[in-house]
Length: 94
Length: 252
Image (cartoon, chains in turn red, purple):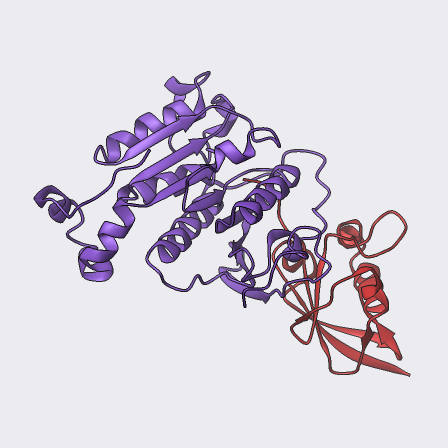
């Protein structure tokens, strides 16, 4: 079964992936399956959201339904149909 | 170290005429009695120092060990062709000093390190993080936590910027907000206005704290998207496991 998750991309990710994405993923979905689908849909920007091993880059800030998902296990965080995921890549320069 | 104000002079009343209705005489005296350390005199540090000086912040310490290069000039608006090769902290202090000669500007030509961090932040009311890399930012975050001094952080890349205000023990710290720095291999591109916008936001946040108002970026990363022309607010909580502030007492 496939369902739709709403994705909001901020800053550089908005440039790469668009403002509001509707991502179709197999259920049960996780943060990992959503970001991997985003990378599959946007091969040119995939390396900015995934590292060399195909994992979500550690620096990327993830929110599910506007709640920050911290920690190393966040890729396994469950995402339900209709949930909103937000993704932000922090910036560094000054 | 800093100018101690007994009251506003006629010259002060004239200089700050257009902001006195907003901050009041007591607020203006508070600003004139305040001391701020700006670490980094680059794209962020230039507007921060200009606007804090213009508002009458009584003592401003500008910390940077770099010299001005031509590639700085698209965004570091205190410097011109004639300043290439000169100390950023020195030129910034001189130019900001001409903007407001009634305050004290102290240049400090050092590179922030574990050895000098305490001296760099000694005796100030607020620290402004106008640095350009996360190792130094994390060190400054640590110093701010240890010395119990509010920290106003910003960073920029391209058309995008972020702002976070740290109130030690009472808010999330920089490492709660950004536990893993982005992997940077080369100097990120920056359009000058992005640094200008974020530096002005830092100056505004600093004035807000000095005047006793609630900062807008406490427990929140305020993210500016200059491509879309919009702000996003990402709420951040204190992380009890945070290597920066996890062991800090909780003051609510």
